[in-house]
Length: 247
Image (cartoon, rainbow, N blue to C red):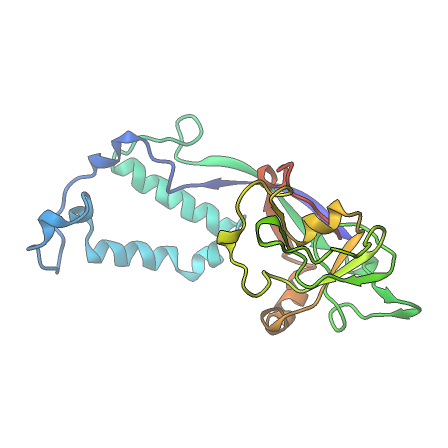
């Protein structure tokens, strides 16, 4: 079971208006100026000392990793906003601000109400399995579908000849060998579909992922973070009508 909470976070940096060229010009310190005429406009205002000061602060332990959302991220955003205001850059965020508020959802695992059972044998959370962050329940037979991607232009359809309706598909994470992101052209759900989308469209009730090396390496950290940090998603992205979700 997954708990859900809402948070609002502000983002800075890219919300700059047309006055970005109004920075006070300062010579580049400690570097050869012979190529200055060919440098990107604005590069001459950057100094190594300034970069060192800014990055030392942004990367300091005081900002606690700047996780989204967090107090450290708020401090970083306030610092950047202050610098932009000092330089006279026109705000392009929320009215009169360099920041823009966006709605986020944090999903945390409810360990006490999360179970997985194969036949009559219960599996142990954290040792035998790690759940995703989509809440739901599923019960049914298992059907193996490889990586589960369907790509019409490549005549790739691992569901061909299989009936997954009312069943749980078993799949490998990621793209199948020989397929790249560049092959995924056209509307999702029509020209191609990912594992979850294709499984949901065919009536499957859940996806059981087979952990790969990267997931096994991160297993201890993932196990510890699911009940505490959980997963943060942007509400506007979750509202994508082409996206699908299965437990």
